[in-house]
Image (tube, rainbow, N blue to C red; front, side, top):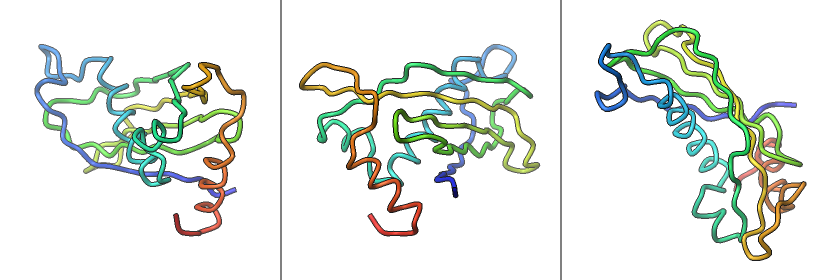
Length: 142
């Protein structure tokens, strides 16, 4: 199966680093979130569309592996790959240095569908979301 993914570029800002000009460990999760938002927008199911559909997808698990430090003013490519989407969202992340292509950080997150009105967790994603993803994987339009 082809994987659905999205990439975005950014430059590390001063407010993301510690006194050693290295990105503070918690901000790597923020960088994952930036890539996740680009991916969900590509699918046509960003956070505004989620809310309108009556579902939320809270993060229930997150993992990060710090391979190399990311520094102030470093240009980064953040990639998010949709690895699972039927029963939950599992997204894989990779941060790479823009100039060298060297991987600095890898990670993953798991999100679970939550019906806002009924206030219940769902053990499968809404059908309309699955249909959107499968249509994109077939090369269809939104």
